[in-house]
Image (tube, rainbow over all chains, first blue to last red; front, top):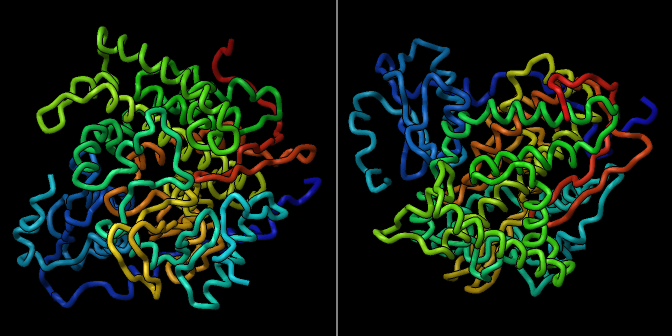
Amino acid sequence: MASDPTPATSPPQSAQADATPPARATDRLLPDKTGAELVVHVDLGRCEGHGKCYGHAPELFDPFDDEGHARLVGGPIDPADCERVVQAQVAIDSCPEAALSWQAHDAADKPHERDEELD
Amino acid sequence: MDYFQEYWHYDSPLGADGTPYDYYLEFRDWALRTDRQIGWSEKEGGFWLVVGYEACRDVYMASRELTNRESTFPVYKTPSGRPLMIGAMDDPEHKKYRKLAAPPFSPKSAESIAQLIRETTNDLIDSFIADGRVDIVASLANEVPARAISIILGLPAEQGDIYRSWTHAMAQEFYSRPEAAAKTIAEMDAWFAELLVERRQNPGNDVLSHLLQAEADGEKLTDEEVYDFFVILLLGGIDNTTKLLSNFAWRLAWDTTLRHRLIESPQLMMTAVDEALRFYSPATTVRVVGHEAVSMHGCDMRPGQFVVKMLPIVNRDPREFPDPDTFRPDRTPNRHVALGLGIHRCLGAHLLKMEARVAMTELLRRIPDFELDPDDNTSWLHGHISGMQRVPIVFESGEAERHVS
């Protein structure tokens, strides 16, 4: 290349930024619910349909309306299923609105009850 | 020096790379050192400027105290003089209208036109691939979004230049050349009036036809309301996406490591698009107005005062984004605010990301090697939406995949 167009502000560092699993997804995994099945609660009072959760974890979340509001699909998550747990944690950490959270399955029987005003 | 006091985005100096990011990052580092997330600028009558991520979230969430009435900065010149449909409204009015426009922008609808966008992108590439050089903004970044929104609005797709002259008049020119802008806007006015007559007679499967039949609170929309929808969809549909594609293509032209990585791992394109949005946020200054007095991060905001979110700096806040000045195509999580937060989250977010993903994937497939033209210059456009407006590149010429006229 004749001249190096690399801007001073951003040297091409992306080589070093290799795929690393997100640290936050593994260090505080699994709330204290040993053995209990987990669900990810989607607070529809907060969800604004950004789609980060189903973008990262399409097997766990999908959009259910025109605005792209999300819901959990595929049933509760087995805490022993590391792959799904990590996927769910990445989705939780990625939500710009902080609308997602872990819940023990039995506590989440009626997850959307208080969010019903949302249409 | 107080960076806040002097801030006015049209004055942001460009660095050696042709972008204002040297200056933005100097500003950020100073704000970090002095521990200030919000400050007061004396320019343009004075306004609060938000540069910290946490403060930006707080401002987005305070939709009761801070209203969206004048959300662009400067305020766009709309034909009617009415505030921008949806964008400059507050709930519950905002919600009522937004619901009407939402269906074509759902994640599913966006994906349903992905194949059309792929074909469009390839037709555009066909038109210049034999030349070995092109301004990628004029020939691709300007065109893809204009054609996508044409599909959704049911407009002739080849009139991208005209639509862009309208959005340019409303978003930029009214500020620099008000008379020329007024003339252009009058032309748009007349064109739309004709279109409306035509759509009433021959309704199609497009947004405008749907809006003509839609009801809000049991009442049909007025012609003015349909026009206001048209204006916001055109403005929102073209400018932001064009700048995203332009900035991303510029980056790929000199960042060969990134380019090779995306060619080898095309599945990274989805997160890479979000990273491009974070790294070079096109929406620069998103504004709200004080409705009730509120105090945030040591600043007492009074009713009537403007509060401007400086998204390019917010999205480089190291307290939210580790290693914020490294472009990581796989950055996860990436809670950038380039498409807004809260109730005003960009209505076209899913469409925009699909367009960028498809257009960039096809560009890299067809032209895997390209670089900035050493005999030409890029140029940057400052504004409410800012970014590269000219990115001349050179590459080894290739062949068209379809017959081009």
